[in-house]
Image 1: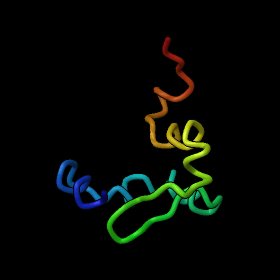
Image 2: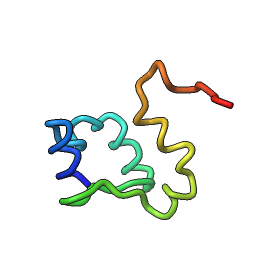
Image 3: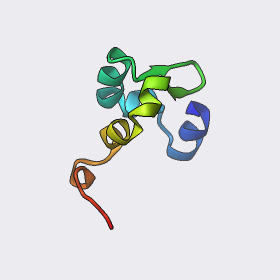
Length: 65
């Protein structure tokens, strides 16, 4: 929900996460809609690979148990 994100954080998530969204959209794993950023069916299947794209670099690759 782009509007909700903007309201909470003061920035459009498309602008904030442009570096992550570009490759995901090009790979067919996500798409940007006027009101939302949406994972495609393929993106949902691979959500465990998609979501770390949005993590801060210091939190990528960490496994919690």
